[in-house]
Length: 286
Image (tube, rainbow, N blue to C red):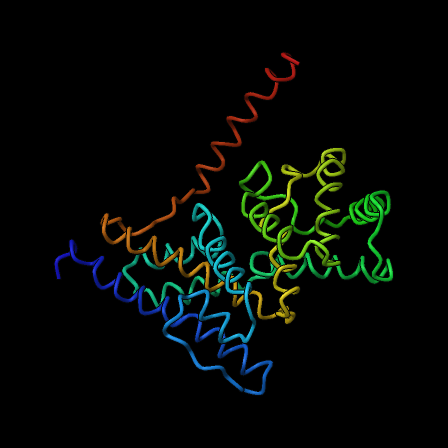
């Protein structure tokens, strides 16, 4: 097969996989949480609508599903799951193997569990407040207590972004329209109003603004998807869409095998020696 045509079978595999993802995910949900009782697929619906239908959740959860899958599809390919899918795919492994590796990366607690940690933190605060909405001063105190205990504020900060994650803002706009009186959303909203200033004052966060995970779990919880372990499955559907799209482009553009650069011990020693030679000059300049 001429490599010019590699993209074609990748495109076909991607369409087949993406089409099956909602049914695979809802089967997992039924198997784990509904004694195996499944709702059959409705092929007349789009991907998000069919997912909501098989979950048995009425409108506007279909819009939540569409938004969730698109917002989690990819992010500059620098995160663990997207990068792993691209890396494995660069070997010309098929889409199924590439997405399987992507899921393995997503399963790591530092990557795919972030929205769970946000919800857990919010629920701990809600229990402390006897489920009353805190004042701004009470929320500030809880944020400071968390930071002073050597912990982070989950959902805040990002390795790449240096402003409020636009994916957070899209979810916030949806929540303001459909669930403005929901207690958890009120906590999310209050945290958004007080946390960035505290994190800037604290000084250790490179980015004090919320990311996508600061909101996504609250939306799922509101619409009845309250099983934390399933959130990574939801994440996986969206991320697979992004990885598949990029693998098609990789094949079409005939990108080479990805090979990380290596650094030898001698190279490291040379870097250290150069740094040592610069130190006296830096001290003199200061």
